[in-house]
Image (tube, rainbow, N blue to C red; front, side, top):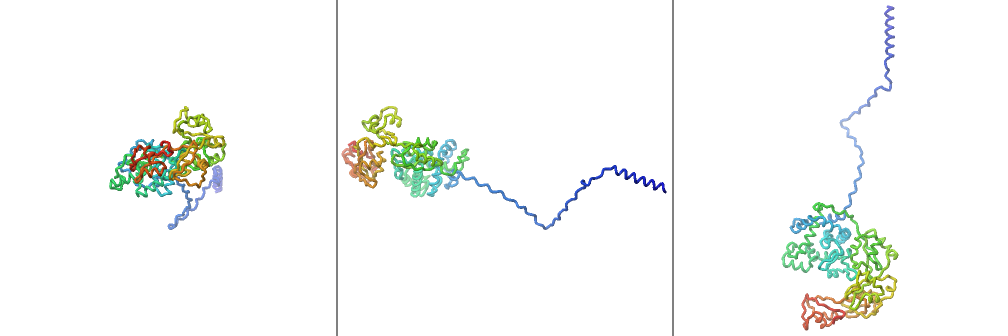
Length: 498
């Protein structure tokens, strides 16, 4: 028994010794307890997670062309064979289409603004595409001129000034205002935009006659000359392609919808080349100011210059400082019989070289009727001495004349006319009255009178202050007094050819 107990004790000690040789589990490796699982209630609402929305992106502003196209209201006429033919022609030469369109950049914003203010269709902003190819200095074979191609008579009727120095048909701002007013008048007259546009091209009288002859009130039914017949289809084709530029496979310009130019008042005569150099302006400066025909502002009518936006303050600074934009003075001289460059130079106190360089004359040969630009530096003897010649020339006041009109017609300043004739700004001129002018004045050689129904030689002679016999002689009428409506009579107002 004692032996069994001893063996048991020995076995227990052996097991304890073996267990001390086995690796012990560290307390840090005890398996973590699992978190309790939340009990899901079947009727519980799903928890809403608050998410801050991203700010909406600002929409891209419309370009000028996009805004104009968005304002188009005319129906699509691309199905019309005449319009379709012009669409096809423009598609065949998309580069030329884009070249013309790119010229529109300086003028489109002002055109859209003027049309919008007068509640006229935005499509009309592209009429110069057809009229002038968006060029301010272009002249047609018929005598129409400028961005909107005004004829001289229509320009005068719409109040656009024209003389040797200035032609407001070329002024993009003034001509646009006049074109919008004229288009508005034509639409009120015909109550149809297609007919109004035909009248803009051909004249309202011709369209009235075409309407009477056709018995229709639709443009498409009228028998018109080829130019007028294609005038509207061209514009409608342009409108269609602006609506669908993908048809041209060209990217249209993305001009900003903002003014391209600003107007700056000028209170003295300036040379446009000098101003352009000072501003560092590009070719658009001359397009904006093409109304200054001699590239010099008017000596007596101080209007304004149009400059690209952003340059207006620089121009104002230059105009107020003659060291930046020198002060100049120019005058217009029309060559008369017996004149030569030396005589003119002596008379006007300038050098022959200055006259030749200014007028790009290579030889001293000049002819009666030639127009010369005479340069004078302000403050020089030539500018301050006044006219060097006697005041032996005279001009007769015509019906409707004013001192300003005579100044514009003769190239003599209003101040000089008033001084020579002891007139004031309130003086009333009478038809037939004769005014003294300096020898340098540009008297018109003749005027042309269009005979109207009811005119007679005696009435015409009385109106212009000439005799019936003079009218007969000038127009080879013999002893006859017979004239017809539509005849054009030559009248020599200074009596030089009597």
